Length: 558
Ligand SMILES: [Zn+2]
Image (cartoon, rainbow, N blue to C red; front, side):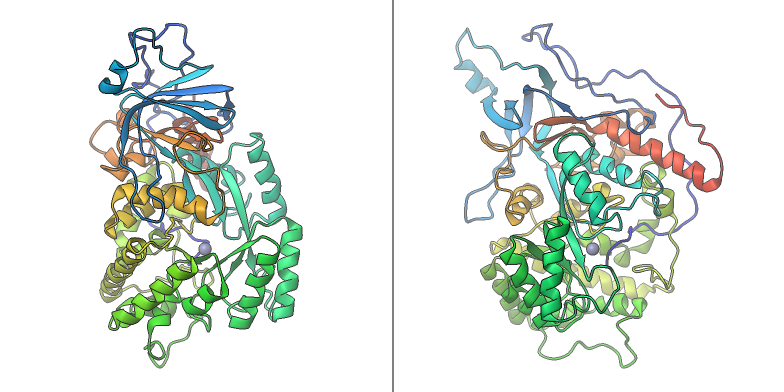
């Protein structure tokens, strides 16, 4: 599944932002008695109303200090899947994009510092008392929207804001309609802090151009295509359904990529190439789950006699039975998992994009759609010409099959993690991948993985899979890629949603931001006001709603 939001087309939700501009002093800001009054504290631009897109920029400081946060390092013991527990409060010093000091400020340590001790200060100081600080999330599977596509003229900037607004600092794109020329330029602008965007890792999708089936369909043509990808500036190769999934063609592409320093991610679908073939060929990551249960079967998939792969309803309906079929011989599944671990193959399951299969009505009623989700994603009807829009009939039995499918899938995701496999988190979205990344964390917890491990999975596991060694979590010497969260994500991942939407309905709209949300996102030491960026995303959604209904937006802005 790809290129599609899990949000189905339902009745238009006219809603949302109260137009009342309350003057709200951020609860997170306030002078501590021991602090010098003149210190330059960061103030979140956080109010109840939307904010015009383009207002907020990333700010670079020569010395940025975060005071009093509880840290989740995203690190663990080498060679194990044991992650470090929270510690705090800690003062963190960032210089030139790198963490250079971490000072424990708990009562026992602080008592030993002596009378002359002064807390670290800088040219910007964040008061993070009561907050949790974790490494920036890494989205391992995005499809960024192209400008002037379904998500409107600012769709790409809207997507970037949802990512940064949810603490995502790195996005690996798995092939985008935005085009490699535009995205390589944006990758550079983002790196130079000339664009409000996460760090971009760009995989080019094969075949490219899309649906030109005579491109890259032999080993020789595949090698030539990979060389062309490199010349175009891609970091990596994304292989999906035919022609790449003939095993010899895939092996040639992976091999050519390795010579050029490009890794390969694969979406195996139902093809000759299963997880065993792909892992042995040396792909870096297996996306979703296709090809894993298939590799454990003793024979063919038990599809009905009138099954046709290219009928989307067939594909997704009968995919819902595959894990159950393979799990009848768990020892064979176990062997496939062990092979992936032995070969160092990363598994990026992207559970969130399949979730509407197990509970269609849940997907139709999510509260976040009232404010942060683009109208074209709120209202997506079944469409036989669009990938993933197959629910022309989706029966009780389909949902039940997918619930069972999920349970078995999750069992093997957990097993892969427990045995030391390199698990990562991705949304297979792009437009609203920022929101869906948080959902992916929740689904990993549902799979039985401890939330402290889930954070490691979604941060330093991913940077390891991408070979980004300086992004090594919260530690002196590591790059300062950080999310500062207004709440404890280990206790409840819902605190990371949007503007405190996990608490929607419990408190008035204009007070939700006090209850959760990522407050600051720091990318290479550059400070982004996460809530201000989400206010901009809300503004864009309002503009787009008005554009698509032919009216002018009348929202109040500030
Ligand atoms: Zn995809």
